[in-house]
Amino acid sequence: MTRLFATARKTLSIRVRGNTVIVEGHRGANRKRYERTFRNRYTLRRFLNARIDRAVDTGYRPVVG
Image 1 (spheres, rainbow, N blue to C red):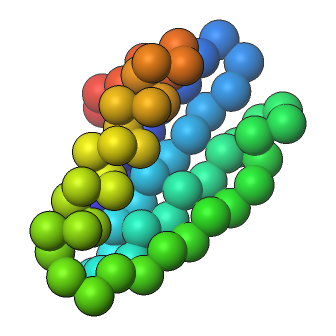
Image 2: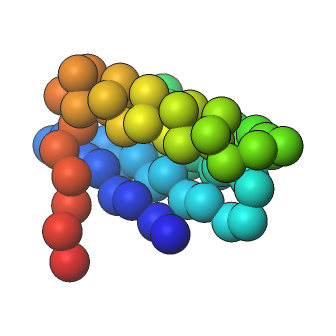
């Protein structure tokens, strides 16, 4: 599953592969790649929801398409 978020100048992708979450920035200072592996689904969902909420709070908008 891939979720894309964008501002006017930056994009952010949040991908889930199995029990791993990969967060990638594609432009500007947020160009880092962050990868985290979880042991259970509850913690993974909690982390994923927190990342999505944080992206929306900082000005990113979901990209649909």
